[in-house]
Length: 406
Ligand code: TTP
Ligand code: MG
Image 1 (cartoon, rainbow, N blue to C red):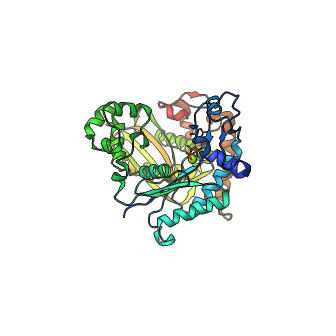
Image 2 (cartoon, helix red, strand yellow; image 1 turned 60 degrees about the horizontal axis):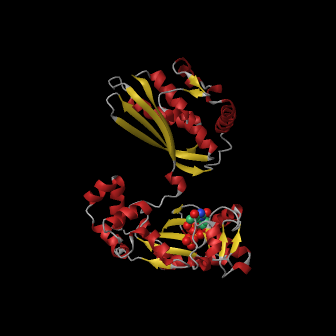
Image 3 (tube, protein in one colour; image 1 turned 60 degrees about the vertical axis):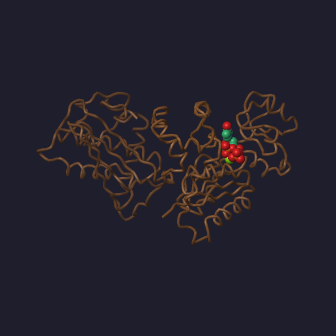
């Protein structure tokens, strides 16, 4: 099924928030960034100010020379963060497949949402309307079969625009555009490409992949795909995209089960500590092993309930480890444990389950001590064997990979 991706970006965001709060500024050249007699640059310029050649990044002094009658505002980040939160909340009402990109920009996967809203175009119109009604802001929207084309479309539609690229037309839509319009093409790349006579995305799309790879390496491949309107990146809601993992390589390959378990416990506790610091729960636990001959395996287990407990992370890791360890196996070179499918907050503890409550309280107490005095300030029984093996350093064990001191 062809995907339908929406890219949405608010117009002159900082300035528009100021204008919504102070309607006297509407329809006028306005700059957020600071007073013109100060050092500093334009953060956001209203479209009226852009007519005078003002743009983000321009020194304030230059801006005031080009447009002396513009209103210059210092701005306040708290206002923009608040507006951003409300903007994202509106988007979340339309699709759970939402990937915020900074404060005023997001991707939504609207595949299959036609039936709810009539069409994705109508869905986008409703989103724009709500943003205008509730926040007093204008948004520009691009709709296409992939992220990169949707982004180009929204940019092209500004201000207050809505541009849909029909399925299958991605390549021909991009072809006439100057290469600088393609995300990923910065000033330097633009210069190099123009130097070889490549001025449009269409010309870039016709360059042989091998030539681009020779010139730009892996980045050349990306350019080739984007220029051809190909972009398989998913819209990734932040929590689903995240994972936390810790791993280490042993100084000497080992088959010692006590050492393997103790290291797994230690790594698992580091993972759990980070998870709790972020206020998240995990649904999946992954074990990673690399054997002496560099064969690497990962084994994953999905839990029936999300967790942030060291014990649950370790128990699951241990269960996976025990399945892998058999007398005939090679010694282990590297061991790692990670969690994924993270959700904010996670489940409410079952209040009847007093052992789960005790676990939670224990984890919290351990975290408090460790966050204050260092990781090795308190030991769980399982990690004690590590004391004899690894030197301690700055409140943690010095193992053989830097990732452990993270
Ligand atoms: P943008 O979306 O790039 O710019 P914009 O919303 O002001 O204008 P447009 O209509 O072209 O989207 O950035 C969003 C906000 O981020 C912008 O309002 C201010 C801030 N910002 C900076 O502080 N510095 C910068 O250099 C840029 C580009 C943006
Ligand atoms: Mg914007």
